[in-house]
Image (tube, rainbow, N blue to C red; front, side):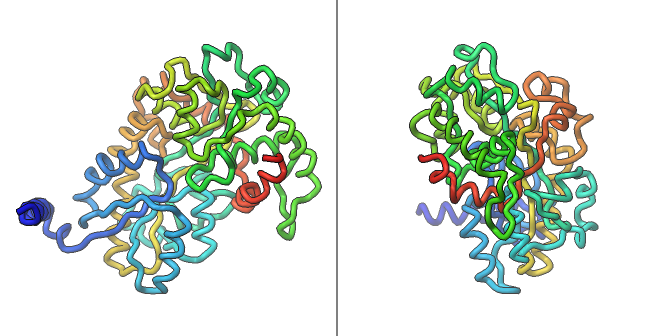
Length: 369
């Protein structure tokens, strides 16, 4: 009986879709979103774009290494993944493997692609995109602190280092080796850059600018909380226990957690004056799928880049828009989030994908963790 009811419900749901939607489906693999954004995709964006996509959308959250291997294993024509959501360093890796479609060839299906803005529509993690990704949202990392414990937060990387003993044992950043959060890698990259490293890796080896910066980070590490969290959720949750007072994390995650009440209301954020990492989440299409499914995926991307999706996304999820919709955002957004001008002014140069990968490999040894 249960199976019959399920079959009946499925048939009714398919019948409710336009005929073209029921005729085909596409698989959307999200390798970037945290738990809150996974829920938003499932409950908001996917249903909102269902009709325009003209296909049923099967949404899945997965890790990028296994997704890349699955695409490569399918060969040149037999792919079963139609749409991707990728972090900057991940799209750089996927592009390097030659597995992504040039979205510019689908301009007729996605006129909203023209609304994306530089530099994020041109380059990701130091890699020229050449049309392989559409910036859906943009993000910023921030210093996040508990105002009940930190009355005067630092505003530069060197000030954070110099004042580290004020919060000894209550400083924290995510383990840079984490496979589910890149915030730790970005923290280390920006810290090293602030202390003179150009993050260059000639022939895959550190140049001379790395060593003095690693020495500073090792000194900073001595003031950190004993254990680095291995995920963004576990990291921010440490605020609730009072275990940490100053952290480095994604701005949207902190603001969303405060909205939910899972961190103290005294949580505040500051964008470092000498530069914070900012970037985008990219929608991409694998090359090894049939043309009809590419067209459906392109229609989904076009919907996702529409003002009707972008404005609510900013309001509800505290991400910056991926398009030039800034003037359409309501004033109340800026009571919570930094303005467009601050977003642009605070941006530091993007660390390369190679530098971030290197940091994840050598960090523990360099700081003695």
